[in-house]
Length: 252
Ligand SMILES: [Fe+2]
Ligand SMILES: [Fe+2]
Image (cartoon, rainbow, N blue to C red; front, side, top):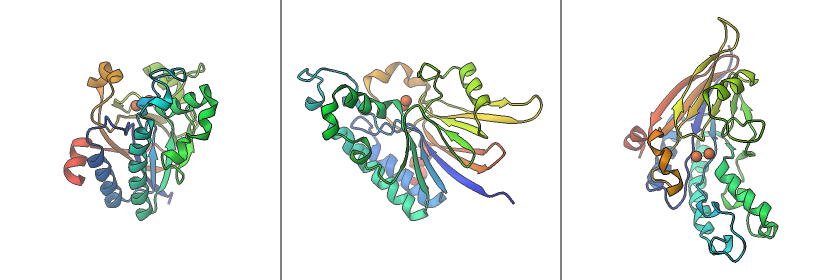
């Protein structure tokens, strides 16, 4: 019989000073991991908000990195990553992250100011040393499921339209495509061969409360919670969700 794996998908957490309920959310994720014992834990990116990296100011400007609060940003992510890592160790789950555009802010800043290479390191500053890292814009296929922060266009831009996601999913060499970024939840199944195989593109919502001012316009569309996939290679996964409300009530 084909082996079955349980994947826990943690969507955009945007950990950081603005995440109002962060400690409770992290505790609940950890209890949920201990209780449900997933084989794989996959964070699909935007693990931190990294608001202090939002701008690309010149050195000496008010928004220059050395004048910002980037230490706070890293500290929040580090604490959350440490606790989730401890829970994963307890149950023997593997840890993966597909980096999001918010992590990419750090890389962009370093690219612009190479001297920052000496002081900033996304992986060690966030405590991600034990996690397998997939760079922003790339995908990782685990047990036949393709994970990435967001399907990307050939121009390297996030592609979230139904038609774009459908095209991307049909072309993917995987039983399903799993992504975040939009903070909405949906799972359309696309027909791969007429009347035969169906393949889902699972957009997994988000998991944070409070948000930066720059997010205001999209906030009403968010779905908050965790998604679990029961995966058997060669067929679409079984999909379960637990809303943040239930997560905090039962595991917080
Ligand atoms: Fe994103
Ligand atoms: Fe996000």
